[in-house]
Amino acid sequence: RRRDEDVRSAEESPGGNVNNLAHRMTNQLEIEMREFGRQLYNEKVAYIFKVPEEMQQTPVDFFGFTPSGRAILIECKQVKRKCLPISATSNGLKPHQWNALELAEKCGAIAILVWRNGEATCTMPFWLVRKLVIGRKSIEWPLLGRENEDGWQDAIRRLCLSSAGLDEQFQRAECLNT
Image 1 (cartoon, rainbow, N blue to C red):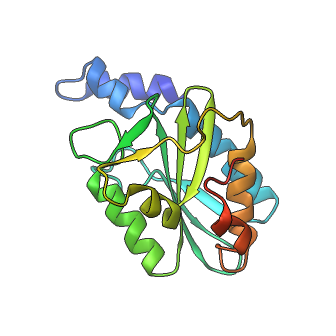
Image 2 (image 1 turned 45 degrees about the vertical axis):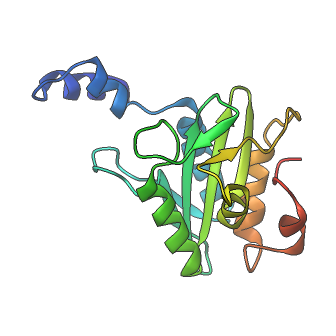
């Protein structure tokens, strides 16, 4: 039903075309994140919502909060490359998204990047993203070919449940999905 509404909306909008529709349609990772958000809600772990795609330059794809009131920002990227560029002109992490995650983290929020590269998905707290980017203009794929299935969801759950959001187990890990 949502896709039918998107199609009608793209067709009815001025200049409605396939490019406008593609921009508005959600990728598989975001669909899975929405479903996982409902699961976290049912478990009373976190309350996570999709940022409306109608907004221009959304700061992140998902936002929410834990039962204790701690804010959560999640950016999902479904990019099949060895590196995720940080650039306004690429299909990677846009500067305004980087800035939102960085500011949220500085203010005490849980800031997370979820990156799907083909079949594998990695969840990284933003402090780790910053560490991986030092001196670079892109984020290297941190899984290095290791298998992982639904570990990305467990990593988000653990971050939401940890009182500080950054316990020692996460700080030692190169990536949360080992």
